[in-house]
Length: 255
Image (cartoon, rainbow, N blue to C red):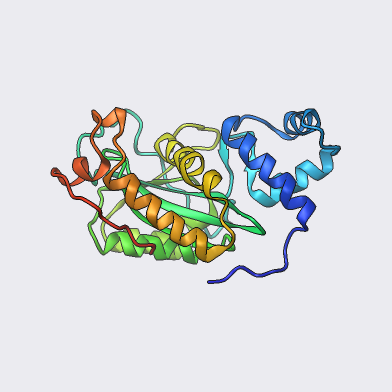
């Protein structure tokens, strides 16, 4: 899938880059605080423009996370949150899925990833230039071809409440869990993944386009899974914890 040239003008993209960096550091910033921050950086900008750009990026400070998953219509079913008080004790007990904004030099794409909570292993991922559900379902199918989790947790966005997503999980006997509205940290492990992806890869590489982003993220997720030790895992890598033994130089393909 290729990035269409039409989109935000260059001046908006420049501001969106600043917003993206600041929001990653301070996800509790709403329109007023973000506007004040940008003005302190010497950018003459009003609240209405900041509000428009943050909406385009899918950012909302009510939740300290990107609100890239927008609620669906009445035909989209909402499921209860199943993780309250649950001890996470083994791989593939709980997966979570989420979406984040990835900037490009002349545009942006959206990244979706499926993460195992116990091992922090990225099971599958996918890129898209739109927020349509297909790229999330594609990544889920790729993940389910590998193994079946016991529970899959998401927010209540339309991508995760649509029939295709729910059907895939139901067909594989996976229990469906959804964050309650206003519960900021239900997907905290995925939020940490997004910060790592952006600070350790995206902001350093400054992708020129979709193909470069795809190559860069493929390399990063391979590194993240197999070579990057996590303090919370006793300085083991996700692949060591997930599979119980070291596996070197694994390359995790996009869905």
